[in-house]
Image 1 (tube, rainbow, N blue to C red):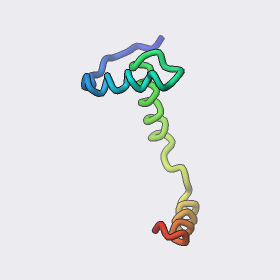
Image 2 (cartoon, rainbow, N blue to C red):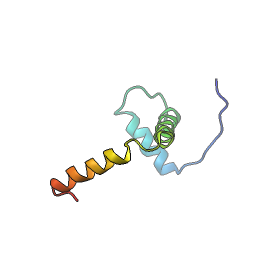
Image 3 (cartoon, one colour):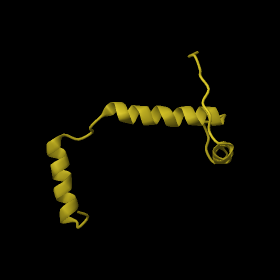
Length: 69
């Protein structure tokens, strides 16, 4: 098991997360949910750019043609 450290969040947020857990299966505690969310956040940051500059330009062209840009 990995070493753990404590972090603090507001009681209000903790209680909201407790209520949210009732709607989701797979998490046994607020701590598990928070760790999952933070792992997802870190994974997204580590991936860096998802699209190449050429792909980004093509996406911008498509969005502009659809009137979004």
